[in-house]
Length: 319
Image (cartoon, rainbow, N blue to C red; front, top):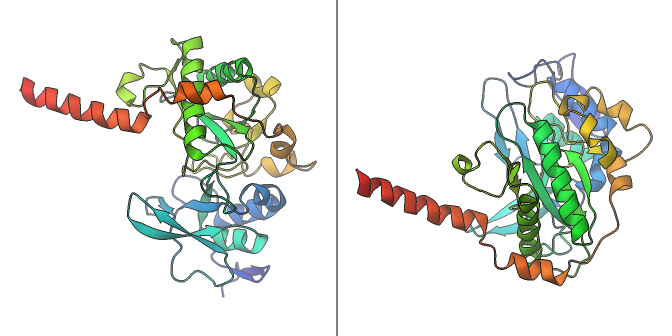
């Protein structure tokens, strides 16, 4: 083993002083040390949830890993989930403990994207999520303004949520729900809330799934439902400066930037506890009218697919 190598919790950590990627000056040690420092904070939000990770190697493009590789240690817990799109069973990791988290860190897993449902019932997500995705460029302020629209739409429906930076350029709003709604009902309610937020300020927010139709507005993404994943609270993101997805009090949201929360600054900010758990309201029942309204709204990906085909056909006919 090289001089930089060490072992933690039975996991052999290698090449710790190598650059983590070509995108930042962080080393692999920086990633390992960060995840180890926040293990008690991030693990409760990963535990029991099938996990996808984004891994990176110097000189290679990042890639998302869902299916565990064959060399995965036997002690890594896993969940077999049928993937309808690829018609195969995928063996997802369950990152339930520090040892597994450190193993992923040694694999250069930078981003942690758990499912919204747990293995207790993969058909019933525990949270409703709206992802506020601003246009390219420095659009975080616009994402914050759009998140405030979502907050108003939630309040109008009798719901409350918690908010965090995505760690990239946007904002995530999470609403914990009771265990009654199915994935279909939750997806319908999410679509309805997105449309209601858009209606509050259509010059700022849009539910247009096709990028060219957004016109520089913030995309209120209602597709984080069903089997979708979302970057976990405290997950690093593969961006310059290594920001992390970080919880913020609604009152403080207008005053923060993604760069305020990085793998270097976040551990000290978490010294007093888990703000994501502290800020999260109690699970709430979905209003029936929200589900009913959402069922009248087309599923974005399906609508976009049909619209894409229609536009392609029109282009062919035109020339």
